[in-house]
Image 1: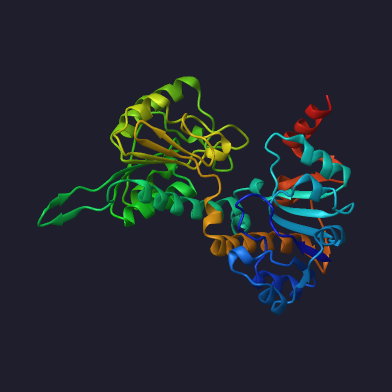
Image 2 (image 1 turned 135 degrees about the vertical axis):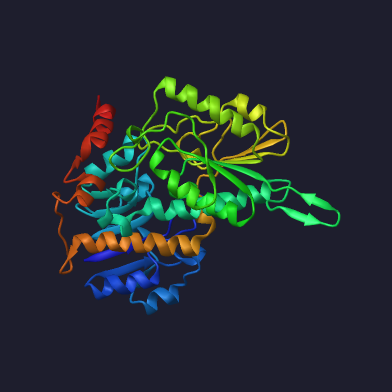
Length: 380
């Protein structure tokens, strides 16, 4: 079994799919691992460290991709790279095509077995393979620091001889992994924090971190799917939600939004009118920017100034802490590979929910309703 780790080519992507510690584990399990020279440099992992862990170093990217039985990446490779993969290869990474059928078509033509780790089921057995949770933890932490840095005031309460400085007010919308980490970080920095989520089950977690849970009146267990993600709201529920949230947005110095609905455009939680009503100097950090944004003013990876209110739409905050992000991602990927690597060979059990739910293409076919519909729609 030959595993390849190519360098990432996406703009501003500093992470690497496997770190040296994981290489050693895979080599001990019977795999041969080749890493493209320089692949880990931006994350602080030298070629020498990979060599010491037992990896081979490759300088020819096309040959690296073409010889591999399994290729692991952070972000989906470019079409030119997908065409280099040999028939029957296994591809593992964050591969969601985002509505673009071309990667699916190329992968089916290569008869590749592709696993998109962002579709990992939220079950106890898969916690150590949950890439989204690992990266969301880092994103939530960095969102709080980004907001604190851009806010033209201090977070904590300060009582000085020159007067008292009141604490900043922070509102976190969405109390998943990223939201909870943002709450915890803002509290540690001394802000007064409020948080909102349509799922009432997270209220205890929010309050355990010292934040106040905002009640809208639409929270119910029915707003959560089987995987623990929030469901899309009805129009009436969205209207009620925005009415209440709008009041809290206007009183906040910093708003951090983290609300995603799987496989759908991110819900709009902050309208243009809400932003227009915020105080001069206030900041919005929208972590849902990759999915269209929770704020109507959000533009991915841009700073938008709205009459003195700053709206930030970062799309890859984990890449701003590449060493630790790569460490966590590598652990998740390695645990997944170990699930399908038996006696040095790939063995797939499609009765296993971890394999079935993450598989995107296999044996020349798109897998699952979403991928099948995307490919069929492109062919129509």
